[in-house]
Length: 564
Image 1 (cartoon, rainbow, N blue to C red):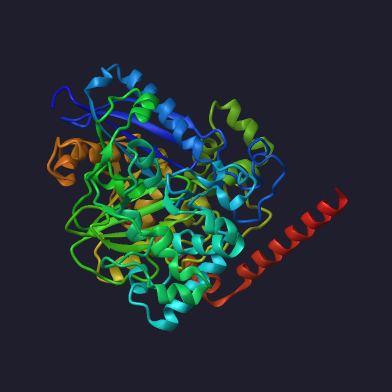
Image 2 (image 1 turned 45 degrees about the vertical axis):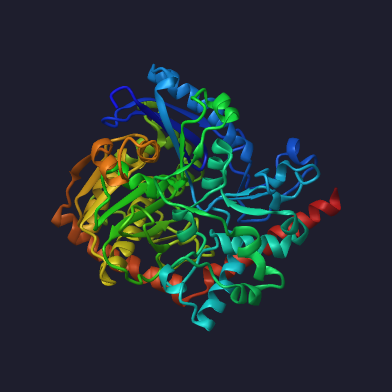
């Protein structure tokens, strides 16, 4: 084991990251990051692929699958080179992906956008997790499931998301039925990339349970699906169902083609795929009950294990063995966190702040954080709702939108920035409260991801939640978690918890709650909760505004088409 290594590859929203890890102790020896050349397609398909201008409707978010292969060709060899190891010492590779990210493919795994004549069809591309254009389909699925009393619905907090497999699949059928018929498999990207590496298609238990609504060994029935749309009754049987692989198991062996891409030995173990959030728990040594891991990036995903099965309102799901075998794995999340902070700094900060940050040798984020840190709790007089990308938990409604209340002519950029930081912490507190109120205790809060470096943000989370904040001791938490699963798949450890104990790393109780500040945040949280319930449950204003926006965009584009 001393001279054995594994590779973990984390596929995020904008880039793929590879890390080379020593099996015996989890030491990270080399890393590399490769940005996706096409990033996220939100406005239009790339003309060089589609062959003609092709605009996308609001709330679409697509990606190009070839970008994922490029990560294997670029980031993996670069990480191995940075580690300075002999590639022959690598015994396994594992990957994780943002979810729910879906790839429509032919029977051999070819994405539909790569099939001749289909590159100009938006539904032929990968639907990224934050593709929210299937909200109407999600609403109908939820309404029918409640009407019929479907037993699987409470496992998802009573609502399924527009981000998930059923809603996106139904949207494809209804908006491009010809393409739907030409699709042989509706594949999670987490499984598609493993297919590319090993030549074997295996569905992983994590995404099948959380994103595919598979509970107790079954998907929603053909009868239920058929009530949603003609022809959808065969969705599971014809497009979705496939053998399930357990987390940490071997999906297959590295093919000659994938060995040439990566520079790794042909025939090494390729682990079953996984989700970026769930795979991070072992990297943080958080494989026991009550340990909530928040993977904080563009969005935040909260995962934790428990010994008990409870129906938690508005959760993203609870799955038997969804994180580690033998425990119930729970998931919740916030659709926008880092994305919100980035939006504010890019679109709402006066030039004078940008100039001041440059003069001080700081980023705009650092400059605003420093100014905001000097404030007392509540000094800005603001409360914000963190729904700029909709609400994933506990309202499960991607038609909701952001809000800042309390603005005056005295409000400054650092005030709004701090209010947005606090809003995401309040959103996390809603989730923690929902768990506790449902009988699922949260005893420890562990943060992974780049936002853990913002000390003001971490202290706000500690004060708002009244929980000590631990921090994963790795800059590449998901990639390290994948590497841990690769070590198990390669046979170096008997199971994921054992490997996590040896290879995971965490700095415990880095940020402790301050009771004085926490008391002031209690008062602000009451205001947040009131806004949360009003705009999220009582008022349809945000949904109506989204409808107005879509109609206006459609009118403008129709005018542009006529003018052309």
